[in-house]
Image 1 (cartoon, rainbow, N blue to C red):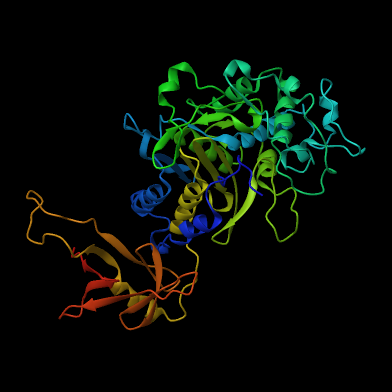
Image 2: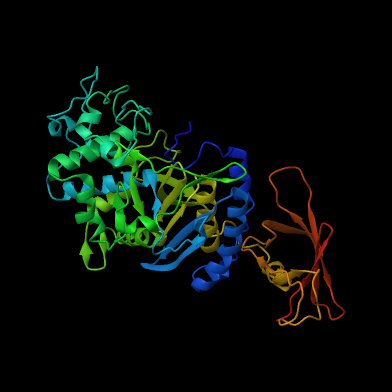
Length: 480
């Protein structure tokens, strides 16, 4: 079922999303742990292709590996009209439901301080509210944070027209906490469960959630351009303009939420990289511990699955399996924005991606491109000689429609070269596809349908690969 504040936007058909993802080439593992420049080189053409196909005006990405930010980059425009570029350090994006991870983080901090029991009945913390239920089973904080509380989900009425119209949580939730199922029976994604957890954080701490986040998460993690709710006036000019696209870009209004513990954080790619470092550090950022190791492990470990073979929910994060690796993530989207936070704790890898258009396929595509770079799927061919034989095809190729005699200073058409790489599963990667050799010099595209697409290489008189032919196009190998 589609939920607008999870990672897939309503107007991206599943078939298109899959087509976009399966068109991404797999990188050779020889660069897997190497130079950040190689990762950037790998990402750039795919980012450009995804943004073009999904009409994304701008995007930012941060990649953390082994405790360090190895890539932080902006693409495109934060404002189409003014051509203001995206800057990963300063451009602010709305991150939507990733806010839920921060609320879970806050709740676990209170567990650390002994002020909250994750397995006590939430009713003990709700003197001002009552959950309407026809059963006697307790609903716990663990239920709220793992989306197993069984609460009803009221979509209408969650937004306010202006920041001063956002209601206090006790008022907004007074008639919206309705149990429709027994707790702990199944996962049912719940904005209201996390919002109720945020209300409990406010009651225990005595602070508005935005202030609690600032003092206990944003400041300790040096997230200096991150806040909850309306962007402060001094940083408003750095907010990326949110858009939809229907033949032209349409500016979307800033959304204000009564359910702000679930929906309302604004941040930058660089700030979110700090959050990633802290979580991959098991609750420690630099010399600051903002979460105990025990609570960090709880946030990262599945608490419930609908079936043992299915991914489940941890506390604030949900499980995911990409490239045969078990990670955790949370996506967020709202009118004009999409974002994705992904952690792969066992490999000390984290990814954050955000855009100023609601396109979940863009987020997923960039995440999978990073994973394909570090951990490509496939096994080493049985015959090492065959693998070695493929290396002669690797290199840079350029469309053979350009001025061969023109210098860089004179007029001429010089198309950008692209790479042919050897994948660790015995295929070649080029032109956004994986290719398997079917006879000498002839390669067939690996597709998810019945089409047969071939590419052919040609040697020069010295036996070196000189050309690549695909369709009606010829590509000349670029000599070093």
